[in-house]
Amino acid sequence: MNPETQVPHVRVSDVGRHEGETVEIAGWLYNLRRSGKICFPQVRDGSGLIQCVAVKSALPEELFETLKDLTQESSLIVSGVIREEARAAGGFEMDVDGVEIVQKVSEEDPYPITPKEHGVDFLMDRRHLWLRSQRQHAIIRVRHEIIKATRDYFDNNGFTLVDTPIFTPAACEGTTTLFECNYFDDEKAYLTQSGQLYNEANAMAFGKVYCFGPTFRAEKSKTRRHLTEFWMMEPEWAWATLEDIIRLEERLLVATVGRVLDRCREDLKIVERDTTKLERVKGPFPRIHYNDAVRILKEAGREFEWGGDFGAPDETELSNRYDTPIFVTHYPAAVKAFYMEPDPVDPRLSLSCDCLAPEGYGEIIGGSQREDDYEKILHRIREEKLPEEAYDWYLALRKYGTFPHSGFGLGLERTVAWICGTPHIRECIPFPRMMHRLRP
Ligand code: 4AD
Ligand code: MG
Image 1 (spheres, protein in one colour):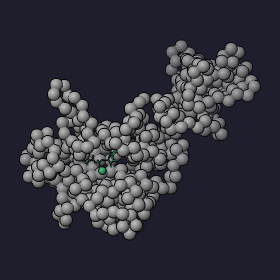
Image 2 (cartoon, rainbow, N blue to C red):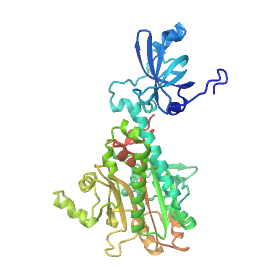
Image 3 (cartoon, rainbow, N blue to C red):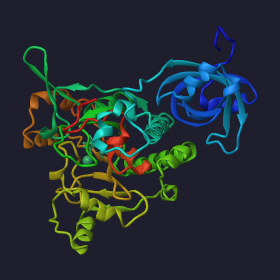
Image 4 (cartoon, helix red, strand yellow):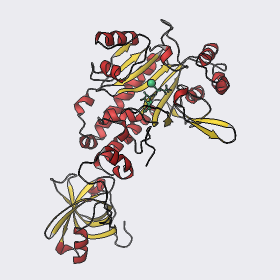
């Protein structure tokens, strides 16, 4: 409610509940069409877009003239009656009877992002403004829904959110992608690559836990799948086996995709997602053992040696055979992190699983059963030449009530990219950090 005018202040997403009433909407001028004695400002307020109808005779002359020439992204407060209009995007329009211009964007320095095409670098340099565009806005709203869906899934299935630290003394996922920083006097700290190691401690305290936070990798790869700062949803489950977490991943993905289809129809339309492909995401998902994956790749004519890790084209080759996400299981221990439990059937392999999204989006989840034996994991730490003293607390978990346990990490931005069908991961986080991008 505006205390001066007593007019209720509403958001565009709520106008449907105010049909026939005079209300106020505060926002930014998205677009404007004029025709003689009438103009049609489109106002966006972050919750939606509404077309307003301003008739010259209904407004003070000077105000009408200002409104008619108002520049894109000027901030303003419009008031008027909400009217149902079947042809309008949201189903409603406003007949304007008052306007307060909060700031007119200068004509000399106009808003740089216009409806014409812009190059990606131009837009990325103006990411702080680009986020206002419909498509970017829709992607970030889907991201928000995915976060809520995954959190709800874990919350409703007995997992407790236990946050893990960002400054850490040791690597989780190999030393080559560590971001190092000075931690006061002589100590070095690293930005976390994954909350997993702390999750394992938390799982011993709470049984079923998850963390959700930013993770960092100094990836020197300029691909459409890599960020240096990305967000990961990581559950860790006491007494769970590889089989248990594969089934958990399946249920989580089906629930998440279903929820986005339910609640983000408009956003998926804006990003022009072919939703029939998402409708097919129903479990169970196919599983491919590493050995079979190697055979399939060879049969497809790819040069691939048993023992290696898959590159993006290999993943695409495997996942293109299916409509749904797939699981590739039992990767060679040598290409995976030190903490993975070896496969009892073939100890060269590990009890690991990657989930590959369809349509060429590649790995969205990495997970495994964890080595729970003190001597064996110490051996792996030494084999990888990791600094033993930095892992003393982690090793202690294998001394005080060790237990079988498993977990995984779902990369948020890759999941958003797949669900939205965006070609590059950079649009799936508000402010992407990549090898050559630290600004804005
Ligand atoms: O497979 P990763 O490295 O697994 C882990 O970090 C485990 N410690 C997780 C766990 O078991 N708790 O990474 C997990 C996921 C990948 O599948 C991918 O989706 C995403 O994180 N990811 C990245 N996303 C964007 N940019 C990068 N540079 C990424 N690296 C990994
Ligand atoms: Mg991985």
